[in-house]
Length: 439
Image 1 (cartoon, rainbow, N blue to C red):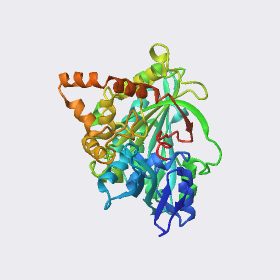
Image 2 (cartoon, rainbow, N blue to C red):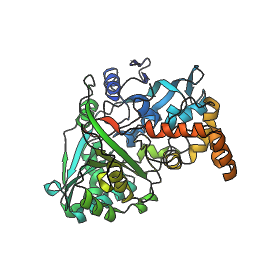
Image 3 (spheres, rainbow, N blue to C red):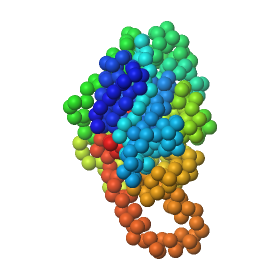
């Protein structure tokens, strides 16, 4: 399951055992081609594509699932079919954003781009590598305002946030511009102007080709050796222009400074969305968060030690991470499905991951997997389960009596199938947790 072919020089047929580093290396070596995808070379293409596939090149070229022009899929009945815009188009819709609920994707076919000939990596740092309360809030608000302005799609930007001490955070803004140095400075100028009172330092790397410039951000594309092991728990939220008004930065920074010295190591990464991603309607694929401008990843880590899931209050790592999110946005509306959160209720993950597309996905599920072969705690349910949830309470009680064994079994699966993740970290710490689910 590790084969990649580019027969026509454009379309890369990629089996789903391939990892992002291997895909990036292959298409560069076979025609200097490029695709938008995440920055962790060890992430598998199967799951990365299945639930999104955001990366630095995304504002320019979309999500990786946007480049998937077809998929080879093993269905619940054992049949192998192709899904594309012209063949099995309803399945094609569902696979691009919810694939593991419908079958085993054995290969994706991607439409590649000619690799950009020049790119500029940059970083914006603040004095002494730390920001106080006032400056931290100012940076967050300026970054949000910049994202809302729909800046040049050739510009990517991400903002890692970490803890320094009870009075300071460490905030960096970094990314890539796909163009010249002069064009980069024009594109970034509104953000640096908004931050001028803090005296930020803007540094750039010399112009590089696609391979050299991308590896600067991702680290080596070579995935032949094992990656570092990490025990972690992660959450996410994404926000469109309307939802940004619900983000309470003053409250959040206060909480981070007060509680950020927890025994759980953590960071937050804020990615700027928009650009090409937002040009695609939310109903075009199962992935629905097209209008979002910011993506927050909240990452708690205990390294080689077991992640703390016991104890009271913030000594419990899950409680700590939940509080980190709720102090920024009290009720999460949108989340990124590749940053899987196993603590969400059914109503929460259906809404946050799939929005208004959930009913269509349930209908498609009934057609292609009517007996619910491909099921897991956050899989799309069949139409029968959706109908069950919509019945009046007296009918629900009756159905529960008749299916108590099943319900208990389902609950057992839900609480035992997702331990705290043991994953792998790479330079940007971006994780797509379904990377190996789709073979």
